[in-house]
Image (spheres, rainbow, N blue to C red):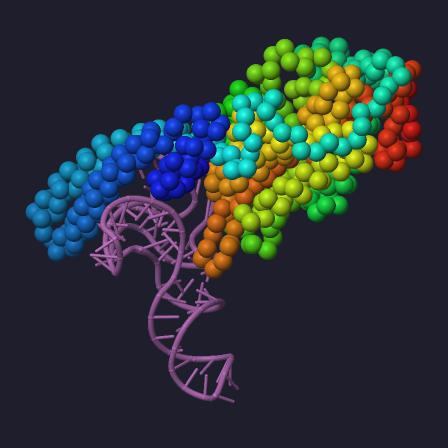
Length: 421
RNA sequence: GGUCAGGUGGCUGAGUGGUUGAAAGCGCCGGAUUCGAAAUCCGGUAUAGGGGCAACUCUAUCGCGGGUUCGAAUCCCGCCCUGACUGCCA
């Protein structure tokens, strides 16, 4: 959660940062609540002090056998308890209100994030590879996959509805091969391979920022939610802990399914595998000291880029503008891969520096020195979204007859197979 | 899932209703002693928050959340976790 002391000291800093995301000034409401809370808290604590003092005297009075004095003190305590009960309830309500308010506010954009209202204002910073010229009209990945008989939306819909798919045979293996390639590359960069829980408590999602505001994007069971990204599980590995400085940066990677309700995206990307309720992703997370975060951010971007380079898939990197930044992010790079059938670049990875936003929400700290525990900074990114990478491979490596050339780097992972179909 | 036993400060561990925020030991920090060190001795050693210019003071915290009580680490309820036994099952 935000540092209330910092808000008290420099409210303008917060309001102007939030304004860049299009929010109205928030600190007047926050500070008003904060003032009431502190005043009430002081009164409650004074009443508690009176109660504690009288209670101790009761023990002493009873020890002397002074029953009258004990009775008088009991009445005094009863009065104090009344005050505590009334003001305590009031205090609790005020605190809940403030916490709800703070929990619903997004992270502050980093100073150097470009200004903008939405996607169209993102800034392209890298372009790699040339989109291939096809001598024929390139097909969409789902047409290719269905024609090969290895991508089956219809059967998946019978058991699970829309936005689900069944991959068969070589395409299923391709999915596994891509994930294996990515894990091998990322573990080679010092990310520890991890197999975390896919079902997590609300508190974990609150820590990373999906809750309380974005509950409708999640799937849940009676007591758990399904992770929408392994960022949740990996980042929460440091929840409520104090790390030694020498273990930082702590780099983690995991290949997991991700589950998203896609509540807000009705009608978008309804065809094909671009937007599914369930998809695989290799996630990268770094837990680090504040002064390491910027460097880690760049490193993680490189780690993700290298996968596309290894696969020889054309891509570009854009820096998200203030209006397109995710809830928990201070700064984000998106990697977009070229899709020939759409003649456009589509997001395949998103790499964010969250600063101490998540660390505060989950109370994750490190020892900056003797008796100096500070919040860690957290970063996360896809390295890469496996399903979308599969889409990109199919479309970019398709041949006129509908067969697919397997990228060289994947051939060993495919057991020597060089083409599909 | 069931039954039983547990969860106390950095660690070990005492404490079953009243100056116990918590004995004792270990560890750690400072000092004395020493040429220096070991040993010994003395002192200090949790976190978060409120009030105060400050010295300082108050509140909360003995897994977490409620409750009983004038007063709870101690009693009651729920939950979480650990161990043992046990059930079902990939």
